[in-house]
Length: 153
Length: 90
Image (cartoon, rainbow over all chains, first blue to last red):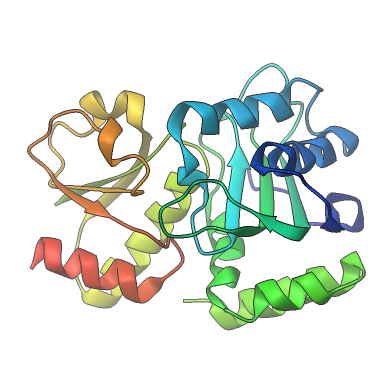
């Protein structure tokens, strides 16, 4: 089962987050608002990082916030939040984080090629600054789609 | 050849690492079976793996193993993944 595409409802640009916990919760709150998850899920995303550390910061400036499948996951969900000011997650190499991708999956065997392609778009060093400058979701989604196409390997 | 990509919960990040490792191996012409797993299940899934791929943040949580542990800093840096896989497998 693939993840749904990003939409205007699941992209939030230039939001303010005091710290990494707030940034992660924001990406989860978008999933709550879009109906993918119920209210307990954003805290579970934070708990994963409390337990395992900042490994979710998979590339410079990019965090992939997620928790295990659970009763609070209604359907697969994907969100993208860009931060007004970057926050530190405590990663040895990839801080500070400008972009948080939120993921919720109903089962662990979700089809990961789509999310890998989305992540690989951030191999383009121009994408994060371009997203930070974007003022509407349609522009942001377009930037990601073209970076995904360029980054296809 | 068996390779295991590890993350905290076995969803998402290890999947990205698995996909990008498979693509790197294909470019290198190396045949290998890459699976994604979580650090808690590692003792079971990695018993016969030669290589464990993971994040610098998770290295300390990996139980004792005979496998080579390859630390990937940037999961979307194809050059880094290719270089480190080649060093581990070459």
